[in-house]
Length: 219
Image 1 (tube, helix red, strand yellow):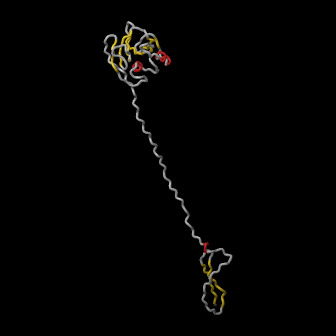
Image 2: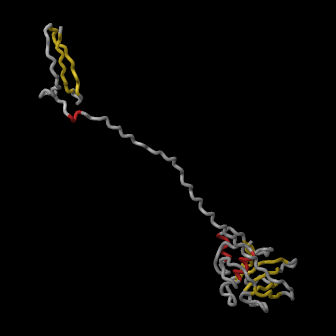
Image 3: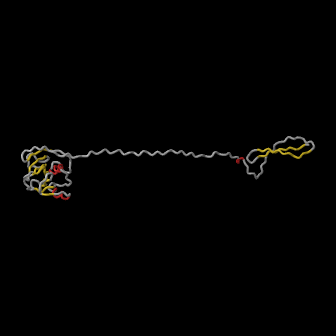
């Protein structure tokens, strides 16, 4: 008994070739074995399979994000400003060498205090704090606006104020150093020409026993 064996090559939609083996009907007669040849696979006209359909998978793109730790920039520390030296006005001093009721002590030096060096106002402003300004005679009224008490009796540490006069057109001020039991008082002053050796830029001491020309005292 013989049977027919057939084979068919068929192209798959993915582009490969499939080999199909078929068996025919059994027959009892002798059959001549013929060489089988693979017929080319023919795709139907309506098939959508093309060579372009063979698409290899593409590696997916991976986005790599690199994170760096943020480091705060150091805040610059401002350089410390150099400490300003506190200017302390040197207390003007003069050598006290008594020689009778009045004597001159000579020139002195000192820092600026708001008044021009060499005048009576400059000297008194070095002996004590003076917040007001103006010529010597004006101190009598200017001190009142700053709340300073005034009077007619001399006190140690008070400011003697003299008014305008022919010999002192701007007035005159002096510092009361001490008060004597008899009512007279010792003053120190600058730019007073009534004492030998005194005058501009020089300090003298004298004892005052008369209130002539004196407006009063600033305490």
